[in-house]
Image (cartoon, rainbow, N blue to C red; front, side, top):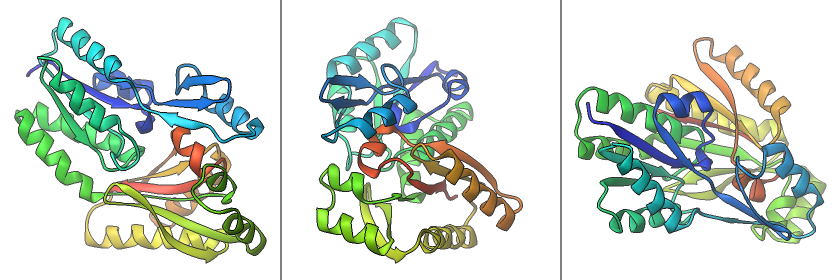
Length: 281
């Protein structure tokens, strides 16, 4: 079997055991506050980010890894004896990371296969797992990339911001919308459609918003196989655990885990956000 490296970014939020097991190299996304730029998972922990976000008078910005950082990584992998790399990145509808990976791949003679995940978070790790299994079975890089590209249409990620305050601060909704949402207890469901986030529903109460997301999960479970679901959240472990327990009670054989979202999502969605993500087969 060829010596193959996987490259991704911190939008995937992979744990260290997964990184080591699958030979993954993670490029950090960055958050830019008034006092400087911080690389996710390197310069800033999740807790430190939300402390700074609460105190910030101006909403921070996000930035992608530089092309030079990517080419340096590709050259490093080549020097370490890797024969090729597959670079799976955050949706190009949200970040320029995938486009930068394509440009960087053209600037080096090391074989790199960039893939637009068209999503973020939990499904990115599942794509890497499946890709590794395909390589282990003897598939060629082009076949693996094609399969993962097809898999992007079978991923799902929906989330429910705890309020629209941070979406307002980051310029995603108006002040009037945020005000009315808080007064009327309106919750929005935001989901990925073809690589971009769209507002799917507005409902009264968090319970109804969760039921909307649960309904999408049930529909996918009826039409295919969904062996695992992630309850995703922005610094809301307690809320994620409640949702996890509800799912495990309804679906006895389903594997459910709680997963932190990238702080780059937290910049827009805000602290307290929860949601669900899965891949159907």
